[in-house]
Amino acid sequence: MNFDVVIIGAGPGGIFAAWQLMHKRPDLKVAVYEAGQPLHRRKCPIDGKKVRNCIRCKTCAIMNGFGGAGAFSDGKYNITNDFGGTLHEYIGRDKAVELMHYVDDINMAHGGEGTTMYSTAGTSLKKLCMQNKLTLLDASVRHLGTDINYVVLENLYSEMKDRVEFRFMTPVEKVEKLDNGYRVVCADHSALCRACIVSVGRSGSKWMETVCRDLDIPTKSNRVDLGVRVELPAVIFSHITDELYESKIVYRTEMFEDNVRTFCMNPRGIVVNENTNGIITVNGHSFEDESRKTENTNFALLVSKHFSEPFKDSNGYGESIARLSNMLGGGAIVQRFGDLERGRRSNEKRIAECTVRPTLAATPGDLSLVLPKRILDGIIEMIHALDKIAPGTANDDTLLYGVEVKFYNMEVQLDENLETCHRNLYVIGDGSGVTHSLSHASASGVFVADRLSGLL
Ligand SMILES: Cc1cc2nc3c(=O)[nH]c(=O)nc-3n(C[C@H](O)[C@H](O)[C@H](O)COP(=O)(O)OP(=O)(O)OC[C@H]3O[C@@H](n4cnc5c(N)ncnc54)[C@H](O)[C@@H]3O)c2cc1C
Image (cartoon, rainbow, N blue to C red):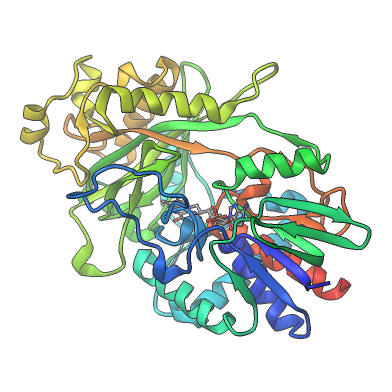
């Protein structure tokens, strides 16, 4: 065998699996195969001047490479079983939270010290939410910020690079099962290993499907989240964000009894474009560095759409809606809440006169031409509900950017060890469909590494 363990993907799942194996079993030969570049070489060519739109690089510097999809993220590590994945359903609630804290300790020891941990424990906001038909989910949130998140990744890599074999720009094409392990096949070579951990994230989801098909691993898929990103003056939400930084608030709509929830809150942050396979959606960032903070706060309002048989392509549905906004706006669309409620599009003049200064140059337009009515009605209802706990949320000048889509991977059938039906073949992180966050993906990596440390 070339390696004891091959890890496919160097996102948080793969990184923490490698880090844990390196410490627990330094005698094992571990390799990490990664489709993208090392962290310092990850540079998106879009500069807003010469290159304005996605030129479809062979590997996307934003999604692929050391650090995975989270490398340039806001670095919010949510320590909770209430959202971010269903890891606890496999490994137990206490274990999941214990491992998330463990990951936090490692991050703190690698450059994260001094960053803030926020918590919902004992907050009076919980009662205020309940009084207004809103539910505040329990969590502790470590906010690294985009800048510190990058430093932590740099430090983890420099500690690992001489003890774990990293193979960058080496996408794995196939995983073949052998009698005593696996053959990992790339374009110009292959490697043998006793155990294989697949951690390919969302960008590897299509490839993951082929692996499951080839190896007869059962899967299911039926969910996509759709909505908008809300941007408003930071002071409107400051009593919430100063205390909790990121709050996950859920509202059950009166009209359809759908759940609408806040997602990815960025106090004094910016709204950004996100490019998924050439489709432009929106997302948000914020920074620890005081000089990069803005006067606005943004967060997403999302509605989950679960499909039933015979429809299977939930991500395709989300993509089609995002494409519609791209068709109308040439990219993301921005609309004032007041314009949306009055049934008219926002135009350049109305956005220019708006008291909220947009942090993303999106095309003024009409989101009601893009989002299904049921989803938009739910979002409007929730904005009015939030207005009761944060007066001003439903102001006419509140900006809505669309669309925000949260794609989910198909769920790979795994046992309580995150092992597939094939011995020593594990699937972790977002590529498994079990996790959809930094903390859960990282914890799943530690979990499997601990198991293999005892087995190999
Ligand atoms: C803009 C943005 C902001 C985010 N902000 C947050 C946040 O603040 N908090 C939070 O909890 N979550 C956030 N997320 C989500 C978070 O980044 C993911 O949940 C997390 O990165 C998942 O980790 P992972 O290791 O499972 O997969 P990924 O991070 O996606 O890593 C997978 C890696 O596998 C590689 N790969 C794929 N296929 C192959 C192959 N065939 N061969 C070799 N390598 C392959 C990819 O190149 C990639 O580097 C954000 C995501 C984005 C896009």
